[in-house]
Each structure stands twice: as structure tokens, then as C-alpha cells.
Amino acid sequence: MTRVAAIDCGTNSVRLLVAEVNDPAAGLRDLTRRMEIVRLGQGVDRTGVLAPEALERTFAALRRYQREILDLGVSRVRMVATSATRDASNAQDLITGVRGILGVDPEVVTGDEEAALSYRGATAELVGRPTPLLVADIGGGSTELVLGDATGPRPAGPVNAVSVNIGCVRLAERHLHDDPPTAAQIAAVVADATAAMDQAELTVPLRTAATLVGVAGTVTTVAALAAGLPGYDPERIHGSVTSAAAVAEVTAKLLAMTHDERAALPVMHPGRVDVIGAGALVLRTLVERVGAAGIVASEHDILDGIALSLAG
Image 1 (tube, rainbow, N blue to C red):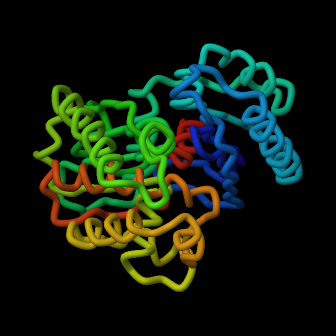
Image 2: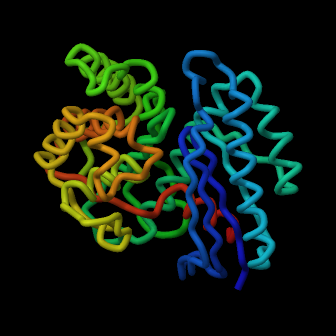
């Protein structure tokens, strides 16, 4: 078996998956999954650059990951950097720092490449779900939307994919300045999300989806809240279905809460407290646009797609 390390460096978090993989058709055997909220995209929407303190938080997390990668005897490493790095004029600072820590260059992937990796990872275990599948990856800086008919661990073939610049960090920094946010601020997020969906539909026929699948922290947190879980439980969240009505209800509750009230929720990661409202609004807007009865939450996403890509 080959041991591989996949690293996803997003706008809000940097995550690590170390897995054993031989034949992609057999899937992955996880050895470890890690996530740290580093907020690499801090201020990027406004300034266009990666802040020095955000870079240092990211490098510190990667140093911890590198120790684990060495301890587990990994033979192949692939790191993918997404929205914040794509948007930053000083992305080379991240690339140089990562090279010094991991010994490999991070790949600053396009939105389409990010979308394809997310689709591959999210659909590997969804054989039998009604197709076409629409996979939505709501990140910190962007949202990837991929429509395809195939499932399984191998590349799915031709799919419709689009990446739009709406994410929980970007929209929270842009609009949600009060605690709790005002009606006007909420409306501004919805307007941006709606415009992005209009743009997305020029490429991806969102309303043709038979199954809507959501990955990443916004979707899984909303799913956990809708289920009333006493703590974050990936096994109970993975594959669960949150109805459209429950998405709307959870979103409304989050937007009515103060920062401290959201922080007290037992499933809430501290790094999501100030951005979950914006992410939930993007999710609600998407569910409404698709006309979906509900959304399937997947704990498998771009990380799994990166790991599978290392096995062929």
C-alpha cells in the first residue's frame, strides 16, 4: 500500500489527510485527518495580499503537519492552495514558505481544478444516489459547483464545473459588521450570493440536479445544528440529509445570535464562529436556487480527491 499525504490550503483552514491507497477503486484507508483554522484569506478580499500574520499561522500549522507526515512514513505529498492564494498578488510568499517546510511546491489550482477534485472526493462513496449529482464546496473565499452523472473514486469524466467568488470569509468580511448582523447586511450577502448563482448558471445547469451534495465546514456545521447533535460527530454527519426547511431555520437562528451565542453551540468550531452566518446564507441561497428538497452532507471532499489523485 502507498502512503500519501494530501493538504488542502483554503481561505479559512488548512487540512491534512494521510491515507493508505493502492487501487483507487478500493478507496482510501485513513491514517489521520487534521484541520487547523488559520484564516489565510484574512483581508484578501480588501487588500489583494496575504497578510504576514496569516502566512505565519499557515506555516506554523504546516510545520506540525510535516512532523506527522515524516512520522507516518509518507511517500508522496500533494498540497493544493485555493481561493485566497489565487487572489493574492504575493502568492509566491506562500509558495516559497511551503517549499521550505514540506519540500514540495503547493499547487495553486484554478477554480475548475478545485471543483473537479472536490467532486471526485465527495462522490467516491455515493454510488446509487440519483444522478446528476451537484457537489457544492462552500469555502472561505469561493464556492465550487460541479454537476456530473458519475460516482466512484476514479475521475468522473466530463462534468460541468464553475467556481464563483463567494465564500464565508469573503462575504462575512465584506458585509457582516454588526453582532448580530443587520437586515441590510444580510440582504447584501444574499444579493452577492444570488448574483453568483446567476453567473454559475451560465455554465452549470444547477436546477437539473437530482441530488445536491455539500462538502466543507459550512455544510457540515449546518447539518450538525439541524440534527441537534450534542457535539461535532463526523460519522453521524457524513451522509446525513438536511431538509431545505431545516437549512432555512438554522440559517435564521445563526443570524439572530450574537458571537458569544454562536460560540457556545456545542458543534461550533471556534474558527467558524464569525463566518458561519455568511456561509449559511450562501448554502440557503443555493438550496433555494436548485429547488432541492434537501442536501446530503459529505465529510469527504477535496482532500480525498487530492489523495486519490496521488494513486492515479
